[in-house]
Length: 219
Ligand code: CA
Image (tube, rainbow, N blue to C red; front, side, top):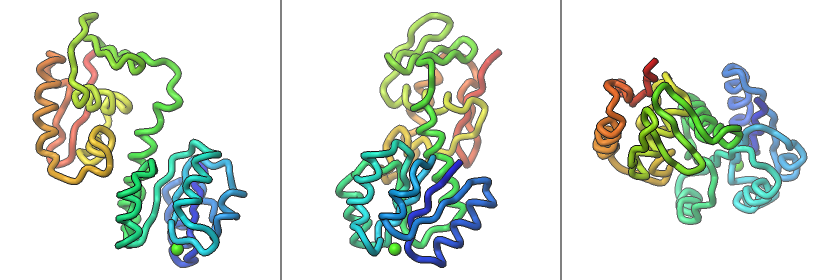
């Protein structure tokens, strides 16, 4: 997977490059907007908003116009951060400097999981007795349609993208509530409880204590 690292600070870019290689990615470095646009196509983009030759937001829009690769914005704390939050530009996520590399990798993986369905061929996914139709957003259990609320549907659909995998509360929050939602994840339990009742299959949405949830598909 080719990851374009758009970052003019050499020390940060080198550290990211080394870390990404360790994680099995193929980083491509660009220190300017011009270099970045010449490095396409790529599979994923990390965009530092503070660049010497072009406004970062403008470059974001340039990139969005020519590539559908997911973009994580990297920003300095403060005014810049407020600006993106306010603009709600449609980046797939953003991280604020200074950030830990583990946090960044977790966010990359979460974005990849969230965006992978963009390429999914069939709109219908069958998981044992459960069928999810992403085109109509309808869920059936053993052929019977169940009436999910948008949040219940969102949680189920998101867990179903990687059945069996433990998905963190934060990932669910980012996907279903949006990454600009800042608050407790407690209300998630209410929606999960309701979803479980409607599915009516014991232990299908398993709680992974202190982490999140996973979908355990019945045979
Ligand atoms: Ca910079």
